[in-house]
Image (tube, rainbow, N blue to C red; front, side, top):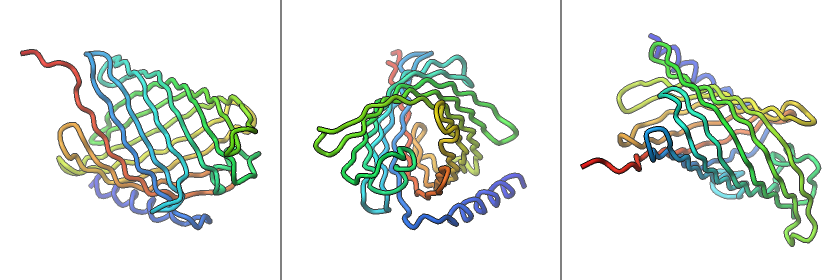
Length: 238
């Protein structure tokens, strides 16, 4: 019965998330990896390719890596680095950098982040709480790179995620994530996500989902295809 209720809620959420004023529906192709290198440490790897439309019109490249320390099976801290290359030709990126008005502008960002993840289980529901701080070093430049501006921004993020196993193979996953600016306007954005996933092997899975990305003055919808691959890199004892 609990599975039926949660499934109906998710379907309703996915349907309502499409009722926005933005005409274009983009897509994010994503890869995530967590690779154990010792009993307490693992590596985080991530790549995202984001498009304004479902088949073309490049928006953003995001590459992220980090070192995880596993306090216990339900708690982990991470420190890492990300590189983000953005083409702000459509309005969604101009909401983040509202002083950008030139279509020839390109944005490159080097980002340092720290995060804490806490997991718990309630009945069959698996919850994950992620707390993240980001230090963002942003360069806004024209295509020729002769005219540019550097700025530093700080941001806090909180994400609550819930996973519901349906069978040994299939599961539902959805989350809500709030972005808080630590300067100027407090509200950054809010991301609401729902997906159906499948375990491909013991250490890999695939998720097909929908993201509702809300800024202070607009809402954007994005399909998401996420591949998760978590091989154990530790040498096995003979």
